[in-house]
Every structure is written in structure tokens, then in C-alpha cells.
Amino acid sequence: MAVEKYSIGGVVSETEAFEAFADIPQNRVLMAEKLTVKTPVRPEIVEGLTNIEMVFDKFKPEVDAEFEDEEGISKKEVLRFKSLGDFGIKGITAQSNFISDLAMKKDQYQKIIKQLKNNKNLQKALKNKDTKDAFINALHALIKELEQPKEQTA
Image (tube, rainbow, N blue to C red; front, side, top):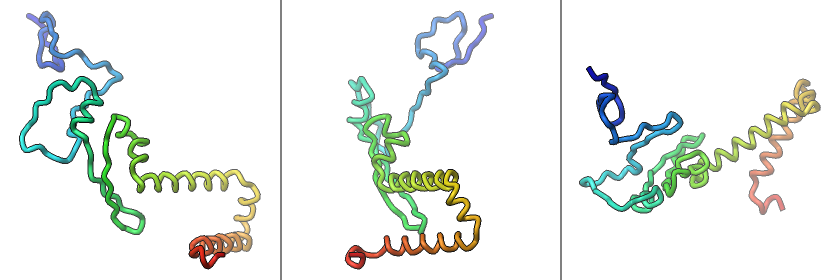
């Protein structure tokens, strides 16, 4: 009795020759996914696409993305994918103004946190209520000055 083995091509006896699909290595992922929200009217058979760049050139995948900022305002952007790298964090961030702004804010906040953790004088000042209040007032004044239109600051 032949032992049956389940594989990507279906059920195969171990004694059968099996050439339908090669096993995918453990460190690889096979992904079959719709790359755009546009559903075709009928399936299209496309021949002659021999590499991933040709697939992206043919189908031009894109998606409409809607983001919401901290005030609840909705922002719409179209993300276009020209290579597999465009699906990663760097690829999406590079083409989205909204996400780029968030990444910049995140970097700034991380720098502030690092400064707060490493600056002994600042930590000492923040422990004292009077110096902490003075520091907060100075920050509010700086924010107010930065938010003023240029004509008023000159």
C-alpha cells in the first residue's frame, strides 16, 4: 500500500513521480493576491509576462487609501505599486504624504524622549514644580510664536 502525502499539487503517492509544483522552501512565501480594487468584468489570460516587473507594468496595481488624522479629518490618497518593494513600510511611506508626516512626527517624538531620558539637567528641572511650570510656559510661548504667520514675527 502506497503512503499518500499531501502536497501543493494535491494528494500524491510517495511512489509517484510528481512534477506539478516544487515544494516551497521554508523561508519563502507564495502569495496569490488581487493587487487592485478594480474587479475585471471577466478573467483575462495574459501570456508572455516573464518577470515581476512586466506584471506590474501590465496591471498597474493601485489602491485608494483613506486615513484619519488626530482631529478626525479624513485624508484620501492613491497608493501605486510598481515593484514588490512598494508594498513594504518604506515603499508605502515614500508615496504617502500622510504616512510620511506621521513618520516624521514619530522620529521627532523619539528624539524628544531620548533627550528626556538622557538630559540630567532637564530631568532635575522637571522634578521641581516651579521649574517644571516655567518650562511648560516657555514651551507654550514657543508654540504660540511658531504658529504665528510670518508677517507678524518679522
